[in-house]
Image (cartoon, rainbow, N blue to C red; front, side):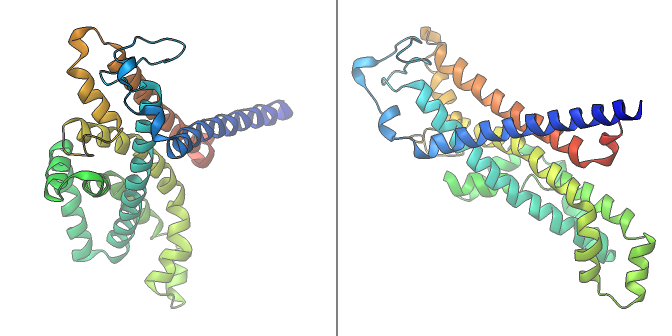
Length: 280
């Protein structure tokens, strides 16, 4: 019976690792494919305008004859890279602020908690549009806007974890030996919150990607000539009434699939790293 349980756990862990590896490989492949792709693949071709999906053009072509498959792949790659960069910056902001609030305490904790409540109290998309507009839009506005608006939830989680571990006996003993607060944080607290940080970082990716696409869709993000998913969907809405359904369907489905892959990846990493999930 014991061997069966060990084999069951081993098989479950192996399946989880394999599934996570496949998801990572798919996402990395899409990103690299978009980076190395030649612009000629999604350049205008006026002799192939408004073509329905076929073997030559799997996702059809738009009103300028641009191949929607390659344009959508380029847009997804752009969204993934922007989302990953913005989510990484936001996650490290959350880690730093969560550690600072819980270890320093006092007025520092009150200030951090005030800004967490402030950012969470404002509608997310409205805040994104305001920040992007103030920064002049474009790539810089999107990245900064997404980065500085996605840290509050993770900050609250990390702060709560640090508040628990800072009262542990080994942490108190370390302080009695004269260890500074910074050393205690780096040696004892950061390793404890690292699983929550990694899981939170991965789960920030789909939110960042969706908000980047939404911001660009509303006209506050990337320039109109950029092959981004938000721009593709925004342009497609102008032509969907003419029967060109494929301009919305395929890019939209691909965006949903990528977001679901990131969400599934976060769940798999949680199963591997979270002791509570491992016992389920």
